[in-house]
Length: 153
Image 1 (cartoon, rainbow, N blue to C red):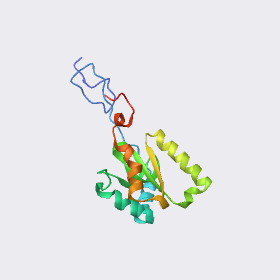
Image 2 (tube, helix red, strand yellow):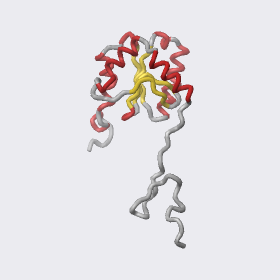
Image 3 (cartoon, rainbow, N blue to C red):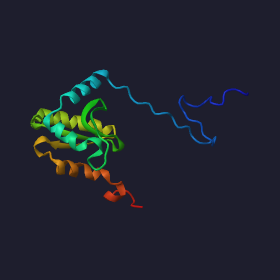
Image 4 (cartoon, helix red, strand yellow):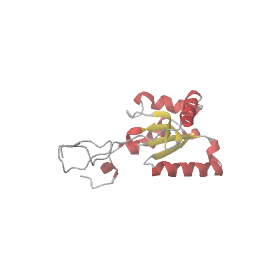
């Protein structure tokens, strides 16, 4: 049966030198809602004063050498700032987030992001400065073994 050597493998699976190795399926990015992309673009054009300040600190790897994006669609939500390498979101919250209804929405959103493997850090506009932003992000920059998690070696 000379046939096709790829028969029996899932579409998008990679070939391996070892015939007994399991194929690695290709990873597809979930389609992003075009409305959310337009919303994110609009939010980038009209940032709040706190977002402008935070972006000046984060852009061009100025904060701890980390590459952040702003107003990104993640898990169906537009987030303020996103560090893709460690799937970390930084949200800058104004006074409206003090309202019980907004707090509930924020909690739901954080839960959904967490289910998608994304961690969320929230900072209040009033407390935002270079040091509080740095302190909020710093714990996520260390390897797990240095944070007291894992086997350490």
